[in-house]
Length: 306
Image 1: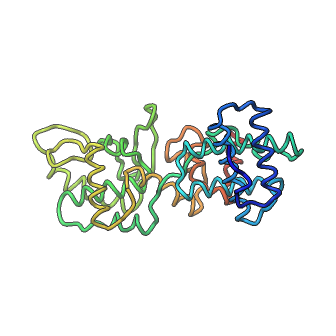
Image 2 (image 1 turned 120 degrees about the vertical axis):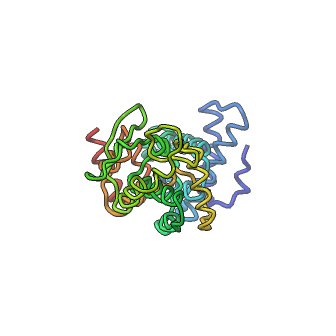
Image 3 (image 1 turned 90 degrees about the vertical axis):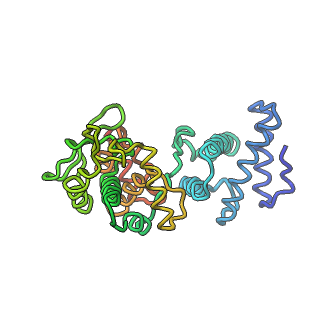
């Protein structure tokens, strides 16, 4: 078991942690020492964080404090599996506080470990600007520029991007038609920069990439065949390296960045949900900042309507 007396916690919190450890053994009948240790260790770290924020009495923890703790875990890149386990421990601890100390259980709104969804890695606006600032010297540069601008301006998945055909692009009406997960079709607007480079690529440079193979695919490789997901991944990694972007960049990061930047600039969740092709608003909710009251209220509003 965890040697609680050796921990640097307030005496009151040590007493509660000791009671919790005994509760796990005597009430919850947690026989395996490793399980008891893991649960108690999780709560020790939880209490330690609260004390670092000036909360010397765990019975005074509020829901906002718990939310800030989950955000802290995300900011420090804890694995989703680790956070899910910690949430189970926290729910058990607050249930214990309610049962033994008559403290209202503030963890009830956390329905399950699935409540926590690790925030995706994104690029800053400056990093996106750098990535998209391709030096145009040849046909492939125009193709790459058109692909990246379209992906970022429309929030496409990489599979949707490489699957596009000429008929899916409407330059006059400024939209792209794509087929997402579950074969669901959606129409997404095209940004100004993407529109300009798409038009130039389609009219002037795509014909130069065509070989003996017939294909209606929009983006072609040097053999005249469609660009693959792997091919696009290599392209974006190469450009990121040239731009000295140190993050472990993936094509999906552009989609995450698109959604996050829209939110930060005032777009509402329902609009972003439709553009991304999410079937449920809760999927789009991962892009909201847990500490932002405005965005949380926005999410709750749409959640009630679903």
